[in-house]
Image (tube, rainbow, N blue to C red; front, top):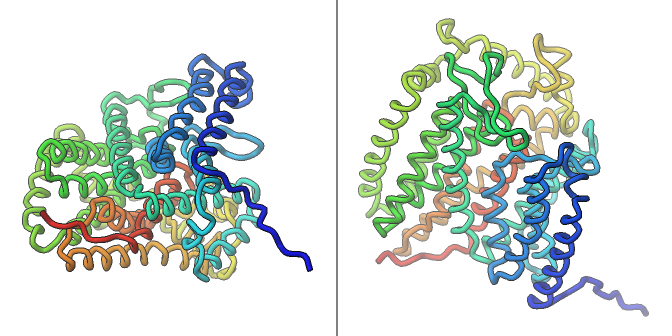
Length: 483
């Protein structure tokens, strides 16, 4: 009788460091010849050549570190907003995805076999993965769709495993907050100068033909694809920074995270993304509610002071346009609102997308196919038109069951996070800021998804997967004594 053998390669941490260093060193040597830059970029240049050489050398530092996975994931989160997409064999590579895949391979080779298995052990998770894969197979470009779905699943697995078993939660929270502050600075610069940052061609002067405008002001998008995606990401970053600000005991740390929160709020204002503003407001309420009762009034006072300073800064920099934009939230289709025509068109798109859902509610029509349907049935729509609602877009393309499971994961992450943090407070401890930020981040994501479909962007997809992973890793959280 033949026994089944386990062929999985198992290496020690020291062996992994030596092997990883050797492989990355070889990659740097190969890149130094210029062949990587020639293949990766349509217009190679000295800066792009330097990047191809420095990146593998940079990763050597992670391999030699005792906190490799934590460092890799924090860096992946930090660079995720950099919308530098390189096509390779029909797939889209981004800096964040490359780092995540590197972390996944490293984690798989250097971890016990059981580590990370818990994230996929439930029937609901397996069913969701199956439905997403089926939808990707039926997509217009199945290979790209499978790659996108797989990249987000791998991001969730690595981030959840690193948070649960490697204490990566604080690092991820700070990386999200700092990345948001950096993007906010870029947004303010774009808004004030009328230039758009392009990592391939440098800065670009915006003209009147620029699509994303409001009352003559250019809506900032940082280094991502559009202002709405940037707004969603800044709303997530702002609640992370706020959680760090409220938890900081050291005056210098509190001042640092207070400035970080204020700058991120200013950048958020320059995107003119109304739903991102509302999502951030909801996230602030969640952060405040998750503070221990004995510290809630103190947190409210700190929040009020920070809010006054941030609001004053926003009015000085962005002016009355922000107030006008905010006043249109309660009645966006009012004829007196300058963007009423766009919101009327959005209602028509919603109606048509709902018709697609009703026609094929169980498996959907396949990832990426809805724009083709909308372009043929909605006046003025084109192949770039989406449902302007993540919920409708998901139901139309992956089916109602898969959409409910995916949304339910975020709802459960929000509820579970609240229950766990209440237990921590009941045990006499203080909630960790990364745990508060992750829970509030789930609320931000759920609200942002109401009026746009930014999940399709690789930049935001990585952040959303990381936030969800952090929230689902709260089961192992223990009370930190209140000193």
